[in-house]
Image (cartoon, rainbow, N blue to C red):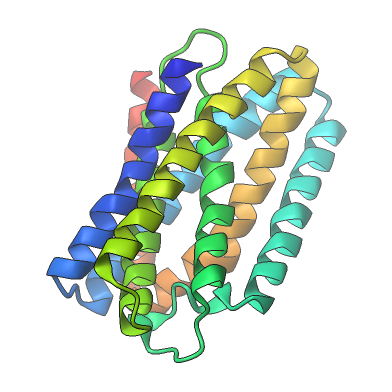
Length: 242
């Protein structure tokens, strides 16, 4: 459980890095888009091989399908609620929105980060090591989330100290989520654990399709596909080493 929390912290450390990059540098839209597209490929690969494939080996296919559907619906509903609170523009391009809500941004980021960290903890069940493919995808996802959100919060007038404190708090929450993800699956029957993995996979896939992929394409256009395949290929390679 402690190891799961540690890797949860590692995955969420990208929030701090992304914020500091936003404070010190101004990355081009193309660069951010390529980073996001690379993360899309890595996450799709990790979800496929680290979550769905093991779940199918343990549970019935229809049960995995139900888990995927429930995870997808949960993220969709939660994301819509967050959007109504002002979090829909937390990753808007170049922080140009004027109606961002600080609370919405925080809650929206937590909504993205908790499932990712919990999934990372789940990947450690069974005595295996951390999935570096999944870790890489989550790290990139958190990096671009913090990068764009920090720009928005800074333009909204929030002090750097408060922004740093916010990301630090989410970092702690992510570590706890990873530990809980490990505990839930580790203390459940193999079939229940498979359903939880399918649920998490559905949530992550919805996040990728609704948020990461469209924005990656908007920023990097024709290069998005190349970067996505590169991320997918690297994640497959990392999976083969585990």
